[in-house]
Image 1: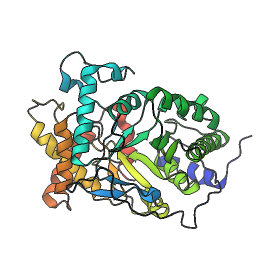
Image 2: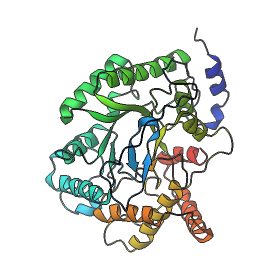
Image 3: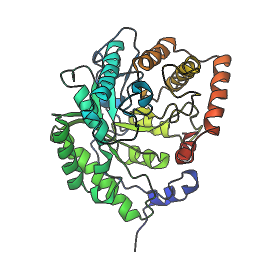
Image 4: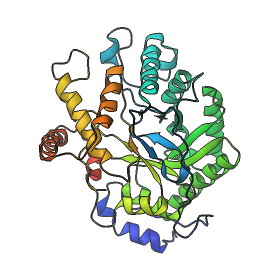
Length: 371
Protein backbone atom coordinates (compact mmCIF):
# COMPACT_ATOMS: atom_id res chain seq x y z
CA UNK A 1 0.00 0.00 0.00
CA UNK A 2 1.37 3.41 -0.99
CA UNK A 3 2.46 5.68 1.84
CA UNK A 4 1.92 9.42 1.87
CA UNK A 5 4.51 11.67 3.49
CA UNK A 6 3.36 14.86 5.28
CA UNK A 7 4.66 16.92 2.35
CA UNK A 8 2.76 14.73 -0.09
CA UNK A 9 -0.41 15.13 1.96
CA UNK A 10 0.00 18.90 1.89
CA UNK A 11 0.43 18.94 -1.86
CA UNK A 12 -2.45 16.57 -2.46
CA UNK A 13 -4.72 18.82 -0.40
CA UNK A 14 -3.97 21.60 -2.89
CA UNK A 15 -4.65 19.57 -6.03
CA UNK A 16 -7.40 21.93 -7.12
CA UNK A 17 -4.82 24.65 -7.50
CA UNK A 18 -2.96 22.93 -10.31
CA UNK A 19 -4.10 21.04 -13.36
CA UNK A 20 -1.78 18.08 -13.04
CA UNK A 21 -3.23 16.78 -9.80
CA UNK A 22 -1.71 15.11 -6.78
CA UNK A 23 2.00 15.62 -6.21
CA UNK A 24 4.33 14.79 -3.40
CA UNK A 25 7.95 15.28 -2.47
CA UNK A 26 10.56 13.73 -0.24
CA UNK A 27 13.51 15.47 1.32
CA UNK A 28 17.09 14.67 0.40
CA UNK A 29 20.01 15.74 2.56
CA UNK A 30 21.99 18.46 0.79
CA UNK A 31 25.16 20.30 1.55
CA UNK A 32 23.49 23.71 1.39
CA UNK A 33 23.46 26.05 4.35
CA UNK A 34 20.36 26.80 6.43
CA UNK A 35 18.93 29.25 3.92
CA UNK A 36 19.72 26.95 1.02
CA UNK A 37 21.71 29.69 -0.69
CA UNK A 38 25.41 29.75 -1.39
CA UNK A 39 26.69 33.01 -2.82
CA UNK A 40 29.13 33.09 -5.68
CA UNK A 41 31.12 36.04 -6.99
CA UNK A 42 29.80 37.76 -10.07
CA UNK A 43 32.29 37.52 -12.95
CA UNK A 44 32.20 39.81 -15.99
CA UNK A 45 29.28 38.63 -18.14
CA UNK A 46 30.09 36.26 -20.96
CA UNK A 47 29.82 38.03 -24.33
CA UNK A 48 29.37 41.41 -22.65
CA UNK A 49 27.68 44.24 -24.54
CA UNK A 50 27.29 47.62 -22.87
CA UNK A 51 23.78 48.00 -24.28
CA UNK A 52 22.54 44.74 -22.74
CA UNK A 53 21.41 44.31 -19.15
CA UNK A 54 22.75 41.28 -17.25
CA UNK A 55 21.38 39.38 -14.29
CA UNK A 56 22.86 36.87 -11.89
CA UNK A 57 21.54 33.33 -12.46
CA UNK A 58 20.92 32.54 -8.83
CA UNK A 59 23.76 31.01 -6.91
CA UNK A 60 25.39 29.55 -10.05
CA UNK A 61 27.40 32.77 -10.25
CA UNK A 62 26.74 32.92 -13.99
CA UNK A 63 25.65 36.33 -15.23
CA UNK A 64 23.23 36.05 -18.14
CA UNK A 65 21.61 38.56 -20.44
CA UNK A 66 18.24 39.92 -19.29
CA UNK A 67 16.62 38.28 -22.30
CA UNK A 68 17.91 35.01 -23.76
CA UNK A 69 17.21 32.76 -26.74
CA UNK A 70 14.60 30.06 -26.33
CA UNK A 71 15.06 26.92 -28.35
CA UNK A 72 11.66 26.81 -30.10
CA UNK A 73 11.53 28.04 -33.69
CA UNK A 74 7.79 28.10 -34.29
CA UNK A 75 6.77 30.09 -37.39
CA UNK A 76 10.28 29.93 -38.85
CA UNK A 77 8.61 28.73 -42.06
CA UNK A 78 7.20 32.26 -42.46
CA UNK A 79 10.81 33.45 -42.79
CA UNK A 80 12.05 30.87 -45.29
CA UNK A 81 9.04 30.69 -47.60
CA UNK A 82 10.57 27.86 -49.61
CA UNK A 83 11.76 24.31 -49.08
CA UNK A 84 11.39 24.39 -45.31
CA UNK A 85 7.65 24.49 -44.84
CA UNK A 86 7.03 22.92 -41.45
CA UNK A 87 7.35 24.01 -37.88
CA UNK A 88 6.92 20.54 -36.40
CA UNK A 89 10.14 18.86 -35.33
CA UNK A 90 11.54 16.25 -37.70
CA UNK A 91 14.91 15.71 -36.03
CA UNK A 92 16.71 16.43 -39.30
CA UNK A 93 16.65 20.22 -39.20
CA UNK A 94 20.40 20.30 -38.55
CA UNK A 95 20.88 18.82 -42.04
CA UNK A 96 18.72 21.47 -43.78
CA UNK A 97 21.06 24.21 -45.17
CA UNK A 98 18.48 26.99 -45.45
CA UNK A 99 17.06 26.30 -42.02
CA UNK A 100 20.51 26.12 -40.45
CA UNK A 101 21.43 29.45 -42.04
CA UNK A 102 18.41 31.00 -40.35
CA UNK A 103 19.37 29.54 -36.96
CA UNK A 104 23.02 30.45 -37.37
CA UNK A 105 22.11 34.02 -38.38
CA UNK A 106 19.86 34.38 -35.33
CA UNK A 107 22.59 33.05 -33.02
CA UNK A 108 25.07 35.46 -34.62
CA UNK A 109 22.75 38.40 -34.04
CA UNK A 110 22.20 37.29 -30.43
CA UNK A 111 25.95 37.31 -29.90
CA UNK A 112 26.22 40.75 -31.50
CA UNK A 113 23.64 42.30 -29.14
CA UNK A 114 25.09 40.61 -26.05
CA UNK A 115 22.64 37.72 -25.53
CA UNK A 116 24.65 34.94 -23.93
CA UNK A 117 22.35 31.95 -23.23
CA UNK A 118 20.42 29.63 -25.54
CA UNK A 119 18.12 26.90 -24.26
CA UNK A 120 17.53 23.65 -26.16
CA UNK A 121 14.67 21.52 -24.87
CA UNK A 122 14.52 18.53 -27.23
CA UNK A 123 16.76 16.46 -29.47
CA UNK A 124 16.16 18.50 -32.61
CA UNK A 125 16.99 21.76 -30.84
CA UNK A 126 20.09 20.28 -29.22
CA UNK A 127 21.39 19.09 -32.58
CA UNK A 128 20.65 22.44 -34.24
CA UNK A 129 22.06 24.79 -31.61
CA UNK A 130 25.08 22.62 -30.86
CA UNK A 131 25.92 22.87 -34.55
CA UNK A 132 25.16 26.61 -34.72
CA UNK A 133 27.47 27.22 -31.74
CA UNK A 134 30.46 25.23 -32.96
CA UNK A 135 33.56 27.37 -32.79
CA UNK A 136 31.84 29.94 -30.58
CA UNK A 137 30.80 28.16 -27.40
CA UNK A 138 32.81 30.84 -25.60
CA UNK A 139 30.10 33.35 -26.56
CA UNK A 140 26.96 31.62 -25.24
CA UNK A 141 25.94 29.27 -22.46
CA UNK A 142 23.94 26.22 -23.55
CA UNK A 143 20.97 24.83 -21.67
CA UNK A 144 20.14 21.17 -22.39
CA UNK A 145 17.11 18.90 -22.06
CA UNK A 146 16.57 15.94 -24.40
CA UNK A 147 13.03 15.44 -23.14
CA UNK A 148 12.38 12.13 -24.95
CA UNK A 149 15.20 10.63 -22.87
CA UNK A 150 14.21 12.17 -19.58
CA UNK A 151 11.70 11.86 -16.76
CA UNK A 152 8.61 12.64 -18.84
CA UNK A 153 8.69 9.00 -19.92
CA UNK A 154 8.59 6.16 -17.35
CA UNK A 155 11.40 4.14 -18.93
CA UNK A 156 13.81 7.09 -18.45
CA UNK A 157 13.13 7.90 -14.79
CA UNK A 158 16.03 6.13 -13.07
CA UNK A 159 19.38 7.83 -12.59
CA UNK A 160 21.03 5.09 -14.65
CA UNK A 161 18.76 5.65 -17.66
CA UNK A 162 18.94 9.43 -17.39
CA UNK A 163 22.74 9.32 -17.45
CA UNK A 164 22.67 6.92 -20.39
CA UNK A 165 20.43 9.36 -22.24
CA UNK A 166 22.74 12.23 -21.40
CA UNK A 167 25.78 10.33 -22.71
CA UNK A 168 23.98 9.41 -25.90
CA UNK A 169 22.78 12.97 -26.53
CA UNK A 170 26.18 14.51 -25.88
CA UNK A 171 27.80 12.08 -28.33
CA UNK A 172 25.22 12.72 -31.02
CA UNK A 173 25.49 16.49 -30.64
CA UNK A 174 29.30 16.38 -30.25
CA UNK A 175 29.18 18.21 -26.91
CA UNK A 176 32.12 18.10 -24.52
CA UNK A 177 30.15 19.70 -21.69
CA UNK A 178 26.79 21.27 -20.88
CA UNK A 179 26.36 24.53 -19.01
CA UNK A 180 22.90 23.75 -17.57
CA UNK A 181 21.27 20.32 -17.60
CA UNK A 182 17.67 20.82 -16.61
CA UNK A 183 15.69 17.61 -16.67
CA UNK A 184 12.11 17.82 -17.99
CA UNK A 185 9.72 16.39 -15.42
CA UNK A 186 6.54 14.49 -16.40
CA UNK A 187 3.71 16.50 -17.91
CA UNK A 188 0.88 14.37 -16.53
CA UNK A 189 -0.35 13.34 -13.13
CA UNK A 190 1.60 11.10 -10.76
CA UNK A 191 -0.82 10.29 -7.94
CA UNK A 192 1.16 7.41 -6.41
CA UNK A 193 3.63 8.85 -3.93
CA UNK A 194 6.12 5.97 -4.23
CA UNK A 195 6.30 6.49 -7.98
CA UNK A 196 6.59 10.23 -7.57
CA UNK A 197 9.40 9.95 -5.02
CA UNK A 198 11.26 7.49 -7.26
CA UNK A 199 10.93 9.95 -10.17
CA UNK A 200 12.28 12.80 -8.07
CA UNK A 201 15.15 10.77 -6.63
CA UNK A 202 16.16 9.47 -10.04
CA UNK A 203 16.34 12.97 -11.47
CA UNK A 204 18.19 14.42 -8.49
CA UNK A 205 20.73 11.59 -8.39
CA UNK A 206 21.40 11.88 -12.13
CA UNK A 207 21.91 15.65 -11.88
CA UNK A 208 24.26 15.27 -8.93
CA UNK A 209 26.34 12.53 -10.55
CA UNK A 210 26.59 14.31 -13.91
CA UNK A 211 27.87 17.44 -12.20
CA UNK A 212 30.40 15.53 -10.09
CA UNK A 213 31.63 13.82 -13.25
CA UNK A 214 32.21 17.18 -14.91
CA UNK A 215 29.81 16.65 -17.79
CA UNK A 216 27.51 19.47 -16.68
CA UNK A 217 28.36 22.67 -14.86
CA UNK A 218 24.99 23.44 -13.29
CA UNK A 219 21.73 21.59 -12.77
CA UNK A 220 17.98 22.04 -12.45
CA UNK A 221 14.61 21.03 -13.84
CA UNK A 222 11.73 22.28 -15.93
CA UNK A 223 8.08 21.65 -15.21
CA UNK A 224 4.66 23.07 -16.00
CA UNK A 225 3.43 22.39 -12.45
CA UNK A 226 3.85 25.25 -9.98
CA UNK A 227 3.33 23.23 -6.79
CA UNK A 228 5.78 20.53 -7.83
CA UNK A 229 8.39 23.07 -8.85
CA UNK A 230 8.09 24.86 -5.52
CA UNK A 231 8.49 21.64 -3.55
CA UNK A 232 11.48 20.54 -5.65
CA UNK A 233 13.27 23.82 -4.96
CA UNK A 234 12.56 23.47 -1.24
CA UNK A 235 13.39 19.76 -0.93
CA UNK A 236 16.43 19.57 -3.25
CA UNK A 237 17.95 23.08 -3.16
CA UNK A 238 21.47 21.91 -3.92
CA UNK A 239 20.48 20.44 -7.30
CA UNK A 240 17.89 23.11 -8.18
CA UNK A 241 20.40 25.76 -9.18
CA UNK A 242 18.30 27.05 -12.09
CA UNK A 243 14.82 26.15 -13.30
CA UNK A 244 12.60 26.77 -16.29
CA UNK A 245 8.96 27.60 -15.78
CA UNK A 246 6.13 29.33 -17.64
CA UNK A 247 5.80 33.07 -17.10
CA UNK A 248 3.75 34.97 -19.67
CA UNK A 249 2.83 38.58 -20.24
CA UNK A 250 -0.31 37.76 -18.26
CA UNK A 251 1.35 36.20 -15.19
CA UNK A 252 1.17 37.73 -11.73
CA UNK A 253 3.00 36.98 -8.49
CA UNK A 254 0.82 35.49 -5.77
CA UNK A 255 0.58 37.67 -2.64
CA UNK A 256 1.34 34.64 -0.43
CA UNK A 257 2.75 31.13 -0.90
CA UNK A 258 4.28 32.22 -4.18
CA UNK A 259 6.77 30.11 -6.10
CA UNK A 260 9.06 33.13 -5.95
CA UNK A 261 9.18 33.00 -2.16
CA UNK A 262 11.14 29.76 -2.53
CA UNK A 263 13.15 31.09 -5.46
CA UNK A 264 14.36 34.00 -3.33
CA UNK A 265 14.98 31.90 -0.22
CA UNK A 266 17.15 29.36 -2.02
CA UNK A 267 18.68 31.78 -4.53
CA UNK A 268 17.49 29.83 -7.57
CA UNK A 269 17.92 31.12 -11.11
CA UNK A 270 14.72 31.26 -13.19
CA UNK A 271 14.27 31.27 -16.95
CA UNK A 272 10.73 32.19 -18.00
CA UNK A 273 9.31 30.21 -20.91
CA UNK A 274 6.28 31.08 -23.07
CA UNK A 275 6.54 34.87 -22.52
CA UNK A 276 4.24 35.42 -25.52
CA UNK A 277 1.94 32.45 -24.71
CA UNK A 278 2.93 30.49 -27.80
CA UNK A 279 2.63 33.64 -29.95
CA UNK A 280 -1.02 34.13 -28.99
CA UNK A 281 -0.09 37.60 -27.78
CA UNK A 282 0.32 38.67 -31.39
CA UNK A 283 -2.11 39.53 -34.15
CA UNK A 284 0.01 38.47 -37.13
CA UNK A 285 1.99 35.39 -38.16
CA UNK A 286 5.53 36.78 -37.63
CA UNK A 287 6.24 37.04 -41.36
CA UNK A 288 8.37 40.04 -42.41
CA UNK A 289 5.53 41.51 -44.48
CA UNK A 290 2.80 41.03 -41.87
CA UNK A 291 0.51 44.09 -41.75
CA UNK A 292 0.59 43.91 -37.94
CA UNK A 293 4.37 43.53 -37.65
CA UNK A 294 4.89 46.92 -36.00
CA UNK A 295 2.12 46.39 -33.45
CA UNK A 296 3.31 42.84 -32.70
CA UNK A 297 6.86 44.08 -32.14
CA UNK A 298 5.53 46.68 -29.71
CA UNK A 299 3.54 44.01 -27.85
CA UNK A 300 6.64 41.84 -27.61
CA UNK A 301 8.64 44.69 -26.08
CA UNK A 302 5.89 45.52 -23.59
CA UNK A 303 5.76 41.86 -22.55
CA UNK A 304 9.52 41.61 -22.08
CA UNK A 305 9.60 44.85 -20.09
CA UNK A 306 6.73 43.66 -17.90
CA UNK A 307 8.35 40.27 -17.20
CA UNK A 308 11.67 41.91 -16.34
CA UNK A 309 9.89 44.00 -13.71
CA UNK A 310 9.80 40.82 -11.61
CA UNK A 311 13.30 40.61 -10.08
CA UNK A 312 12.84 36.90 -9.31
CA UNK A 313 12.86 36.13 -13.06
CA UNK A 314 16.42 35.97 -14.29
CA UNK A 315 15.44 36.19 -17.95
CA UNK A 316 12.58 35.38 -20.31
CA UNK A 317 13.63 33.09 -23.16
CA UNK A 318 11.45 33.73 -26.23
CA UNK A 319 11.93 31.69 -29.37
CA UNK A 320 13.21 34.14 -31.99
CA UNK A 321 13.01 33.41 -35.72
CA UNK A 322 14.72 36.44 -37.29
CA UNK A 323 17.46 38.95 -36.70
CA UNK A 324 14.75 41.60 -36.49
CA UNK A 325 13.11 39.79 -33.59
CA UNK A 326 16.47 39.61 -31.81
CA UNK A 327 16.91 43.36 -32.28
CA UNK A 328 13.38 43.94 -30.98
CA UNK A 329 13.88 42.12 -27.66
CA UNK A 330 17.25 43.83 -27.24
CA UNK A 331 15.43 47.14 -27.75
CA UNK A 332 12.96 46.12 -25.03
CA UNK A 333 15.86 45.77 -22.60
CA UNK A 334 17.11 49.25 -23.53
CA UNK A 335 13.61 50.68 -23.05
CA UNK A 336 13.16 48.84 -19.77
CA UNK A 337 11.65 50.86 -16.99
CA UNK A 338 8.50 50.54 -14.97
CA UNK A 339 5.53 50.45 -17.30
CA UNK A 340 3.31 53.49 -16.87
CA UNK A 341 -0.47 53.44 -16.85
CA UNK A 342 -0.61 53.65 -20.65
CA UNK A 343 1.79 50.76 -21.15
CA UNK A 344 0.01 48.61 -18.58
CA UNK A 345 -3.35 49.34 -20.19
CA UNK A 346 -2.02 48.42 -23.64
CA UNK A 347 -0.48 45.22 -22.36
CA UNK A 348 -3.63 44.38 -20.43
CA UNK A 349 -5.74 44.71 -23.56
CA UNK A 350 -3.28 42.56 -25.51
CA UNK A 351 -3.23 39.84 -22.85
CA UNK A 352 -7.04 39.79 -22.72
CA UNK A 353 -6.96 39.01 -26.44
CA UNK A 354 -4.19 36.48 -25.82
CA UNK A 355 -6.24 34.51 -23.29
CA UNK A 356 -9.31 34.67 -25.52
CA UNK A 357 -7.52 33.04 -28.47
CA UNK A 358 -5.49 30.50 -26.49
CA UNK A 359 -5.93 27.09 -28.19
CA UNK A 360 -7.16 24.12 -26.18
CA UNK A 361 -3.76 22.40 -26.09
CA UNK A 362 -2.31 25.46 -24.35
CA UNK A 363 -5.10 25.90 -21.79
CA UNK A 364 -2.61 24.80 -19.12
CA UNK A 365 -0.97 28.23 -19.42
CA UNK A 366 -3.93 29.63 -17.52
CA UNK A 367 -2.57 27.82 -14.46
CA UNK A 368 0.32 30.28 -14.62
CA UNK A 369 -1.70 33.48 -14.38
CA UNK A 370 -0.79 33.53 -10.68
CA UNK A 371 2.61 32.18 -9.69
